[in-house]
Image (cartoon, rainbow, N blue to C red; front, side):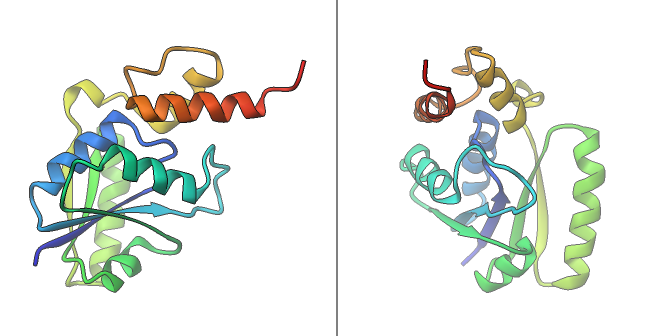
Length: 164
């Protein structure tokens, strides 16, 4: 069985992430979308919320499993017996960082390859950080994230607004 892990924080999942998820799911028998618990970041959504949102927006893709993890993605890939890590590339700046990580991972676990998918051109500019910033200032994020994510972000930001 060809199994891959697509790790990320997905805070929030964007249309760019979904593009990579759909395309990489076609390449393997099973794709594990792995939501990282990153203690260095201050996420908008909890890990549990991100897993729930990802399950909702990928429910029509039959060979996907959504899980959470902490620690190194290469260790998680080994535990899952995945042969590949999937990484999306938006720009040359992504490539520099991702190549270093792929080479490090290759030394740590030579049996796990890294596969890079370039982001579709329409999403090359898109990041979770951009989505959060636009949403924070009341901008329309419907062109950047699926509708369930729009609703989740609006709800989350409404919770954070001070009472009038």
